[in-house]
Image (tube, rainbow, N blue to C red):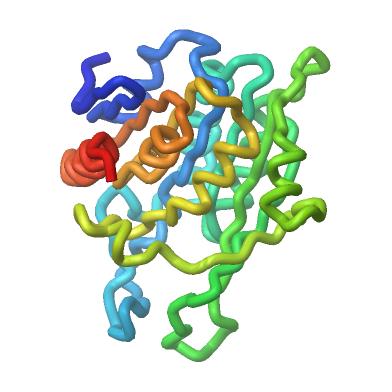
Length: 255
């Protein structure tokens, strides 16, 4: 598995997700975060920065029908089960276009869902069509292997501390990705760093290994690096890995 970019704690790999996953040995990672294609590129319109824009993100996001989409999700989730350690966990982010398929695929491929996190966006784009409610949330599923031997890690104490001394609930609020995190280039579905930092802190210890099979602009790897975890990110598009690599290089420079 040849690295497109590599430093002391991070590795980026350019290639088809299934081809690359096939090269990874069993039980290699303590955590997986995946933000898979939403299959939204259907020539519709959306809003960005107050302007009307196309929803098309690229061929990788083109719809493939209900059965094709579900088989795709089952296939990559099946591989993630294999490369996860027994006590490892997987997080999947999505919206109503794909998250129900991912949830069903998790159970079909041997996972047990631990939480259904609702990420409430404080500054969502408006609904231009005005024919339904404004889409202001995404779902993040957290699951472990459905195996009696599995003992997943959860830093309950830290999450309670972050939440002001109270148990953290499954609704998380925050803004969309700020411009400062897009200084190296833009990705159409880039997640904010605070979201990945919380996910990694909640479910791994320092030194843990983290995999992102659809790494895009590299937020998962940047967050892992900041938190002293090791990470591997996979993406099929070099233009996104260029952004991710530059973000990781900048993390090497002391502030």
